[in-house]
Length: 456
Image (cartoon, rainbow, N blue to C red; front, side, top):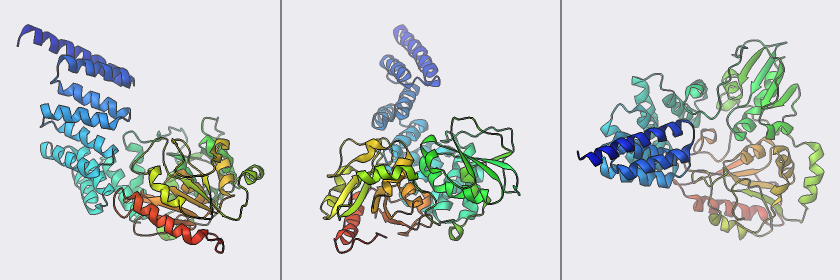
């Protein structure tokens, strides 16, 4: 090797090492700059491509990450890590078939790459190929019985298909899963496993997202009914709603009172032995704060038309898996005798159709609940809004992706968790347009002035 090439290689490796240090410190953009610099000196440096793509992935720049991996694979076409990372980027872009091909190629090159097989199963699940998804999990668990991600995926599949007995048990593997959304709480007090608890003080701590808490807080008063003093630690924006009898709600971040035992919120269905048939589905189990109702009543006047709220995106950024492109909602605007209201929070570049937008007055979920109480019907994608409306017993239509989250199950238009919900499922992956058309047709029959009865 000529001396100048050798020097460039040494320099690029030094720069790469600096990038790794920055990446480990969480300085993603600074690390990406160093990896680009290393590649400018050594264009064939595969590890630098891997790390640059990883930085872009962490930054949510999945298209750019994909370009980096494709460029690297032209240099190193037999790199299993590159094919795996490429699959991860494609998965984030909801290009499930392409992602599955990348993970399959990974496994051709590295048959024991268990993470790739698990994520291949995730692709199959998103494509509705549930038997293949299950087989991928089982294949990994046969050789690695403690693979937490495989157990997690298996749990989601079991719950999706209504096998709650085994599904809840598998769901406990979430605490060993890498990068789980909630940290494992390290309390000195023991965890409650369902033993008699009369006279004890139990801390129930919420986990994961707002929707999870809204769905499973129904179990909190059931615990209180066992004779326990219950402290419920919840997300601060939800605290105003957790006015349950016998429950002391404490917002996360505030000091906790003394307690004897603790339990994560989403472990309660397992403790109660919940099956599809025994879901505690009586609604409403949440009510809006009474002192907020007059204000919201003044913002939602009764004009003799159906008052319908719309929420079309599930996160603070457009998520193609859970969010409906606003332009596809146009058929709803053609339905007459509707007063439209926005319930879209976070990402909202423009309103998809003429509507009032009262969300600027919302301070927390107590306000959202008081607003929902003034409306006749909620139309939403899979968001916390769907769970809140369901918990309030409000007629709600939920538009779901082809392969939905486990809690919506498969092959049914109703929800065993929320009697007031009606589900509109995509007929094939990504087919929001057809789902919206079905919602529009259903809405037409509800919006005629002579038929303003509550929706189903």
